[in-house]
Length: 397
Ligand code: NAD
Ligand code: MG
Image (tube, rainbow, N blue to C red):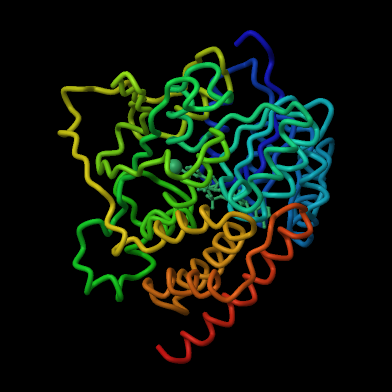
């Protein structure tokens, strides 16, 4: 790599965080300046010993104290910060040029925004930040001349298949459609009548990818693809009608761009997040990621299907929310987070997830998302409503 990467990893103990550290460990020009987590003290402690960051930020205050105590004996030079303020601080440090945004859910918004305001190169895994507040987030990126590079494998693939000046408008550069691929998750072929009783363990067992629990459930409901449709609209400055979801169960083609001359460009590779991470870290150069090259003689036949919007109601709701605009996608995201958490705790059933999201979208006022306060208020209101729905479902189940 030509220039040195000085990195903050927001969410270093998660799946994306660990994959990022794996890529970092292969390149001497990559230096970790800050690591962060929510509560996982032991894992973060081990990462501190191995990567010797200057700072570590822990969202949970009690966990931060525990970590500080442990580090006092082994690495007292590491500065321990805590709370959201600590996360925001390490996202905006002068000595950092690159921020991996890999916190899961709405909790990622404020620290990722802090990186945007500080004009950093942001490697964006935390799709929820864009779903919650796409317009405001993109404004901050532009205004502060931050660089935004997608880590989500599909968006990274699309980015790789786009012409240089795509930000001028997709039609202008000859793009006909974005083809967003989806594996279809573990329940693509399960009988509809059986979906009601699927367990959290079945839902998180993704056929092709190893991921955190929340995104794994999102993949099973296909809300993950819904969030990605919205994410793609903001990243590539386009509207939902330009984005078509194509189910491709093998997860080898990571997405495609269709051009008006009939060409379709695709990015392929083994399903391993280290490829998009290494791509975005080194962009516009290329570096080793540790991912095995794709063996075309080994891969199964490629299949493609249209998504069934009845089976995957969450995907339909995401399209509708993006069409409604304003705080609709904030409500969609918040209600989904509450419902997924309740499902993982076995408080509600799998099919209650879309029902709770739809109820939240129907009951709450959708307003223009013109300020961060408005977005955070919509997020809070949707969480309250969704939690009431969880309680109601819990009682009637
Ligand atoms: P994960 O659950 O494995 O890790 C989440 C990380 O966020 C952990 O480090 C955790 O400590 C931190 N975190 C959680 N709550 C927090 C809070 N309140 N405050 C501060 N930190 C908090 O999740 P993951 O699978 O690594 O996914 C991370 C993000 O990347 C998600 O937005 C997901 O949609 C996106 N993403 C993941 C994958 C994947 O393959 N795992 C692929 C594409 C996009
Ligand atoms: Mg993805």
